[in-house]
Image (cartoon, rainbow over all chains, first blue to last red; front, side, top):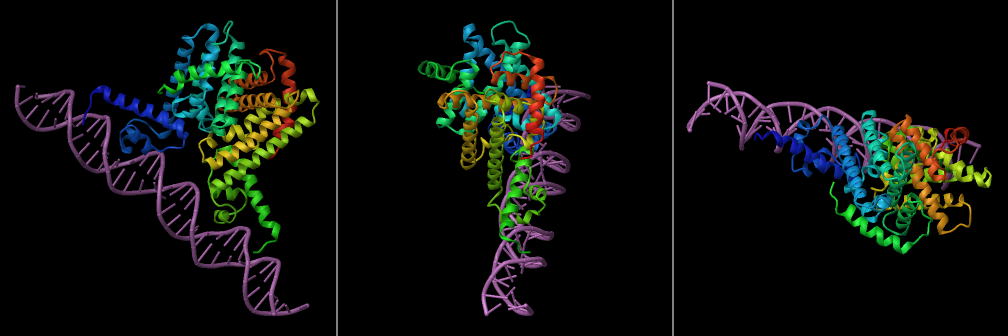
Length: 216
Length: 216
DNA sequence: TGTACATCAGTGAACGCGCGTTCACTGATGTAC
DNA sequence: TGTACATCAGTGAACGCGCGTTCACTGATGTAC
């Protein structure tokens, strides 16, 4: 079967998209080439017509997931009032929905510890996307963009992704909920026990829209 | 060869100790049974006289690493003046030495993302140790110990481990240093540009003592 | 326009390899007599 | 005390399995004439 010119590009994109979900769910080494191809409705033999190696797909899938996440949060923030932008992102990020859907969530908590052990080539690709995500977060802080805003963004992202990883380890009990809540309070600069009732309502509304419904 | 009663326990402990280093370096799936046994000066055939399965060793090695880390930081804090305890821990944790020595460092940034995908049994073992580490961190915050201190400790730990993971991805360039610095400032509640010269000196002194010289 | 050929995305069997696990065996030393 | 036996931590070959990768092949469709 010979296909139109766009066909191969579409297939390639479909493999990357499906793989980005499964790799976030199972880890960078947690799923094989045959299963990834099956996810895209193909057999494993055709894999090397699209990618030089398994690692090349991991890099593409990771970059795809990072771009989609960065875009999504930038868009989410753009829809909110200026003084609500940061909290909108943080509440969606540190929601039970995001915790329980790693496959459609941020690639940073899912994959960065593994990426840190990969080849320099893979690490550099990741670091570039991470840099972009830091830039997006820096835009959400009030005041002039600059080194100070970038540093605030770095710390916020570290707290958010770290909290999500720990919350995933803890499962879905009280410890996990406390971790999410502590992370939200820390990033948004609130005292630990501030306005608990109001917070919960806001989290539910934003998180459902931002994470559970999204498909990366 | 038949050995004394303590001999098997000593061998078992040696395997766990060596494995805890290698697993933090290479990831929970990054090194095989044969290499782990070789590290302990043995051949792979004897492995199952000590452990029911590879997963059982991973759990033991993880628990060992967590206990050692918690002990070490509690001790490090105990040697500092009360108002310096938190910063002593944070500066050691977010140092280039700790970033560049995952094998002898904290197990949380090295392994928790992978543990989050393991069996409930493994996850619960990890969560229990994480809870202890949170308790240790909570002791370092001024004021009465309680839910508020625990939440502060959770956020601090999330920021610290998240920052370390991102700094490891970034390598050892400017982005990596900025991440570490941003993490320190965030956990210690400093403005982004506070007293840079004094900070750097303090970091070097504490970090060398705390991390580079330690052998877990 | 009709026909023969070329293309190439995708198929599925096969490869070599490393892994976790099993097992028959070894041999130094504790123990029973 | 001396000797024969029992023990069992550790050895190393072997197992089955799944993985990443390769390769000869297929067959629908674009293209040249």
